[in-house]
Image (spheres, rainbow, N blue to C red):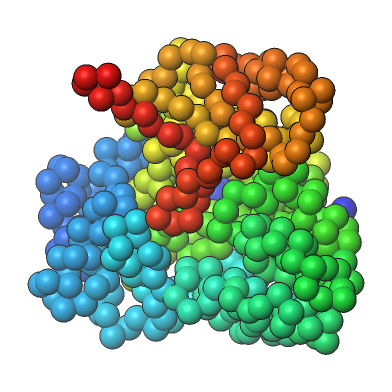
Length: 456
Ligand SMILES: [Zn+2]
């Protein structure tokens, strides 16, 4: 597999060369946020850290973290006190903000992300690295089928695509299937950008609603984003088959950085990070201490935007568990690779083993053709600690004959035990009796908490 690097000077940096470059940019960023934001100054002073004396990585491990709650509170304060929503931690003149995105929080109020012109330029350079790695060249046609308006991956992606000279077809994520299919047949995009679930939806709905199939579009590559599906082999295979053998690339970013930061490769061996000169990833152990980035290390991730001008987030905890791979990838592309393992808030602890509900779902989904892929884990307290065997309700497909079910329950239990190292008790549920529940952001709730009432 041959590939091109857009910025070989920085993408090939490894080891001490990379770490030293990151350290000097980090020092500059820490001093800058301290000097420009009273909020960061107070925060660092309270934590007893002084960027002017910052020297090494051990110093950084004493710096305070940032998280979603703090971001929300900071933005509420700036609404109240400064009459803008960008947060007390904003580090530029707000009149320098050149583009605004927002994410809809689960509490209802949006969280705003601002970009200066320079922030846009850094993101564009990262996007160019991603494009080069996946063989996209100027003039290739790109259909963008994500929600555009305010979404973090919406207009920012389109903005970069336009500036880099691609033939941009901004159909958006809300177009009707018929319109998308007609546009794809007329304009013949080389690349489609969408969420994995929207891609799967198209594979199903295009043949139902039009005289075409998604294979007829002639799309050779998909960038998928917004959900972890692009790194799950079954979902990649379905997407690739549905689009006539297209390469599926999973793109990724980190909150508070100049996204995108990474993209997977044909080897399906994790997401290569290509922006390590402008974003810093730390992997934390259970005590929130950074671990060396060695092959196979797994823990909570924290990102720092090394050069972000507007609202850089210092040590932002996204509450994701990530595994890192530093061994060479067979594809030959440089950069450490990361694999999403699950969300901290969803994590259960069974006899000392971390259990991610999405991993249980993936094992169940790939174990049998008779199951729908919907699961629900039952627990009887709000604690993350769950007793073994863990009760897992598995939804069957419609009209599965009794004779086919023999041994299915035991088979699923064994596969869960082998893959995830905990004991499950599986209950098979008829398709029509299983009601998937969804959270505020539309994601399926995989854990159901049943609290027995006192008089029960
Ligand atoms: Zn690779």
